[in-house]
Image 1 (tube, helix red, strand yellow):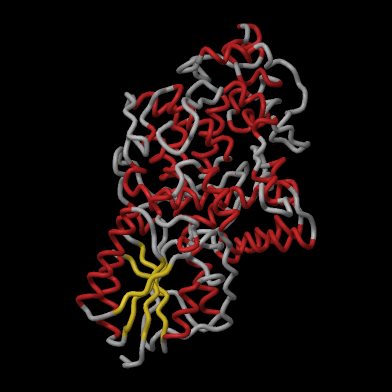
Image 2 (cartoon, rainbow, N blue to C red):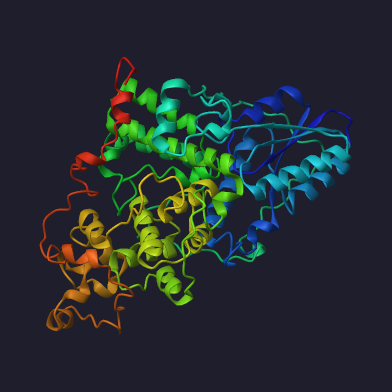
Length: 520
């Protein structure tokens, strides 16, 4: 092999060429670049506590699409993606031996223990083989070095305090340009085949036409989605009104799956929003996309601050709660057989498509932890298995929050499943879409079939306990909303009409964003 300088760039959750510091750095410092992706067998084992499969069919399918897309992009730029199956530390050691010209191994830093363990092993291998390691931070909107805290231990434990600090004291770095050309692979290096789902002991998912996320993986698809959502349809200008929707592709940005794999840069989204605001309109909706990106940042930084505590049952608050581990209740929740239609519809959407709305996630998490009293880690690991947009810090951060052992400043926050169903699916269209056993129950009555008369159930061809379950739990607070379920008015929120978000739920961050003085 050539003695020219070669850099191995190990890609993990940074599957893009745009706004990618490591491609720029490698381009300046190498004769040859080896963009490398490893299918690490540890990603296809069981989860820590309940031994659920770590990577499910939807997430793997999206990953494989993203890998194929990245390879095509790199080929068009004079490079290629080298793909291997194996532990990254072993694959990298083999490549260093094989190429004899490797000067540096580069990768983006990750946050949580499994990824950090891989980084340590890579550094050990490189130490032994006299090869340098180069790392950088590239996963968040605000760079970790630009946070307005002297040390990560100073990160506030409440999101609003974090948001106000970064909005007033930090800036988002500019987007790095996309390289036109990249240095080639070293001569003679085999690119390697991209495995199939079967190669990784996984099944191909079945496409469901009802899916709210019928999109493909990859950087090119992510950039096309942003163009569609911002520039082609102006959907971003009404995001705040529609973001609690449940049916359809455009009620929310749907950026999360691409963000999770790094197919799109949060900085790119931010700067596109700022451009959109200059050229089209700036309103609460455009701000709210940034507000949600900041939540993603926040959970990532919480992961840095607290380390493995984000995975521990007592959470960040070291709070002892007598969680149950009832597998029968858990199975009913997993499979959408709880007898509570709004919960079941969301859980079946997840099971059939790998996707669930933000509104749905908050509700099913509250139901699992507060109504059923089950160990929140059961839910977190089920989401890890199924969600296309699984992101370790966001997933565990949100579950800690829902369980009341994370960053929620309010004590005992609990969602009322019936009120939530009425607020966001007033006519019951979403429930009927995913729970067809109930499709003959008209209007909002579909949210509380157990309250209907025998005659009404018989007319709708519903037999509780036979073709649809009796509720596994009925919370006392639901009764306040039962008499409101009959009626066919339009849904007040989460549908296509204007949003009527209650005053107390409006966030004052918007005042800051649109203030000229920035002194609020």
